[in-house]
Structure formats: structure tokens, C-alpha cells
Image (cartoon, rainbow, N blue to C red; front, side, top):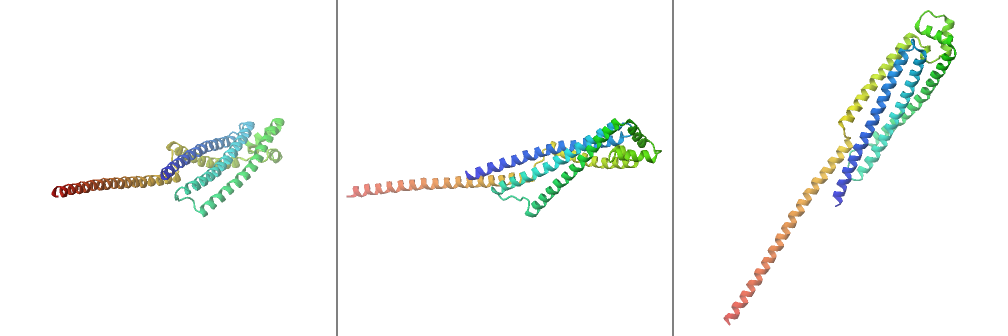
Length: 275
């Protein structure tokens, strides 16, 4: 009964680990999709800058916001997944011997999680500043049409006075409206690189979600459960075999006893007849 109970717990724990892994995979798909949309919006914000100043600022701010949300969610998901795996491995180790992460690997993973949190906090701090700058630039461009016209001339023409260039730089600092053509191209190339990375991550997560890939820890638990089931089957067969032999020996001893009793009775009868 104890072994059967342990086998049931192993199967239940393995199923729970796979279900949780599937949930995390779906979350990663959503996060990667948001990151892809963020990259597309950032590239559009740079590309449409000379044509539409307000639209460029809105797209850039929205792209930054989505990028921050994706990065924070990805880091939080990684931490939650690590904590869940740690808890699941502790439960599994109480049932059977399972090859989990070593102390060094676990400490390294926790250090990476801490670095990821610090990175996200740093990115959020800078990202929020950039979003505020884009919003302020949008308000400034809307409130000062002449300054907006100077910014458009700065973006579309190389023949701009030094004074106009300084005014645009001061008013729209660190936004797409204050970027030169070469800076915009470099920014678009960088955004395109990150977009390709996010697309590759999205395809990988999508493939894992569609294939329903199981975790290695869950596979090992099921293997352990199967080994226990085989041992339990062998022990059951051995028990049944021994029980059958004991039964046959007991029946044989009863028959032997009956034969002895009959023989003794015949001897007694024969001796009585002789007298």
C-alpha cells in the first residue's frame, strides 16, 4: 500500500510539473509576442519620424512601455519558475532519489535571477524617463507649431541653421525628433536586431507549447514511478508464488496426516482381528 501510494504521488507530482511548465510556456509566448510588437512599434516610430512627428512620438512611447512590460514579466516568470522547480524538486526528493540541481547550480541560478531583477529595475527607471520625455515632446510639439516645423525640417533636410538645430535638440532631447538620420538608422538597426532575437524566442516558445514538451524532472519522476511499479509487480508475483507453494505444502501435509490416520486405523483393525 505504501509503494502504491508513493507511485500515485510521483505521477501526480510529474503531471503537476508538466502542467505548470505548460503555463509558464504559454506566458512566455505572450511575453515574446509583446516584445515583438514593441520592437515593431519602435522601428515604425523611427521610420515615420520625418513624416509624422506626433505619431512617431506616440509609437516610440508605446514601444518603450510594451518593452518594459515584456521585460518585467519575463524576469518575474523566470523567478516564479525557478521557485516552483525548487519546491517541486524538494517534494520529489522526499519520495525518491532524483537528480536535481546541485548547490552550485542552484546558487548560480538565484544569482542570475537577482541580476535579472536589477536589470529590469534599471531598464524600468530609464524607460519611464524616456516615456516621459516622449510625452513632454508631444505636448511641446503640439503647443509650439513653429518649433515642430523646425524639428521636421531638421529631420528631413541637412540644411538647417545651427540655431534651429540647438533649439530642436533642447526641446526634444533624447527623442526621435532630435535624432539625426544616421542616429535613426543605427537605432532602427539595433531595434531590428532585438526584434529578430524576440522573434526567434517567440518561435521557440510557440514550438514548445504546440509540442507539449515535458520537463526533464517530470520525465525522471515517471521513470522512477515505472521502476517502482516493476518492483511492486515482481514482489506481488513472488508473494503469490510463495503463497501458492505454502498452500500446496499445507494441503500435502493434511493429506499425509489423513493417510497416517487411515493407516493407523487399519493396523488397529488388523491387530484386533488377529486376536
